[in-house]
Length: 248
Image 1 (spheres, rainbow, N blue to C red):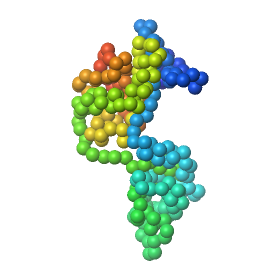
Image 2: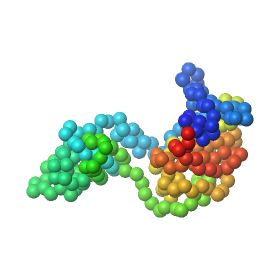
Image 3: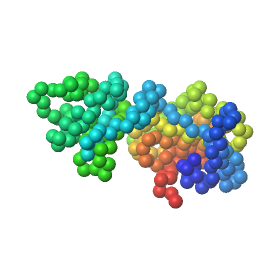
């Protein structure tokens, strides 16, 4: 809602309070008086999203830790095992002054070190930090070829938008009877090929091709989990980037 408010200069009101079925997430009106509706959804691999939610819900702080830590956990890592071994790994590194537990020297590896050696875990510690004791646990992301353009994005989206889950959101928008129908996609890094995700999330490229959007859809917002200028599309104006974080 705040993104649309900043980019389009409009007021957006929250709508879906659960009191009626198939209510849109928000309603708005454009400066020309056109009435619109907004749906917000997240796309990505379901298993990765579930693991990320579990990781975010857990308090990973370790008593006595003073560094900030980032932990990347692979798909085979059980969160309960990570929680059990994390204090020994973090405190052992901080005592030794190293930012990676795999760099610790053990005369006789303890249980945590043996677990780490067999686990898909990467840890990075930062002694100079404004967030002492903060530990962020993130499921491992993907990787792959990086493109210096987004030329293939419209074709990929034209297929993805016609798949049942997103068509359900668009049908919900159509049911409002409003003329401006906008879909806001929060995009996990598992939602699309890395060759598309990297230039979308970390570059400022804009697609050159047209989007074959489902009937009725007039606005599409693509928002990866990074502070890059948001990529958005409108049926009337095409593609654009909007650095809404810098707008007053």
